[in-house]
Image (tube, rainbow, N blue to C red; front, side, top):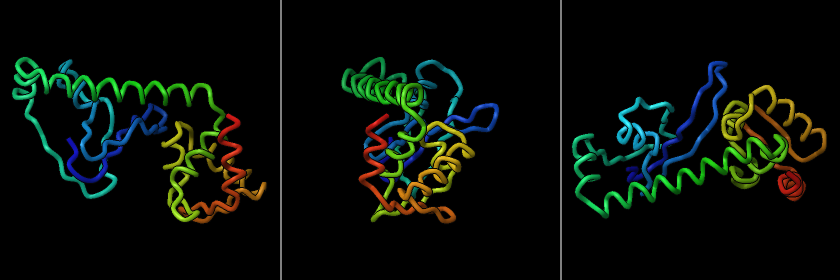
Length: 170
């Protein structure tokens, strides 16, 4: 369980393309880890701390004992699992049914701090389930439309309202 900080969990495909599955924040657990403990399977994702992080770790034998004997612990695990599965289903729906441009516009709006997004094209691609090259082309197109301006590792939101319309259009 994350006590403080943030961990980002992603999958990397054979082509090297990375997709951000979810972030684990204070009070949350990593479902990939839980699945490994429940199914005795290896961890299939990559977990990287996005900030300084403090964790509470439960050894596998204690985890199994708590699952067997503690109804509140079991309920906590299954509630976290259900929440994360819902998040994963929403991610799958967005990637499958929402245009890349709309997903990118929404990600830019979500990540912006005072109208600026500090992220590389590769990080944006991982966040929305696309490829870096696609993000580069889409950002260039958004810049030509006057919606953003790009600089190395930064995107300036010039027209947040226009981006919101694009994100809502899906």
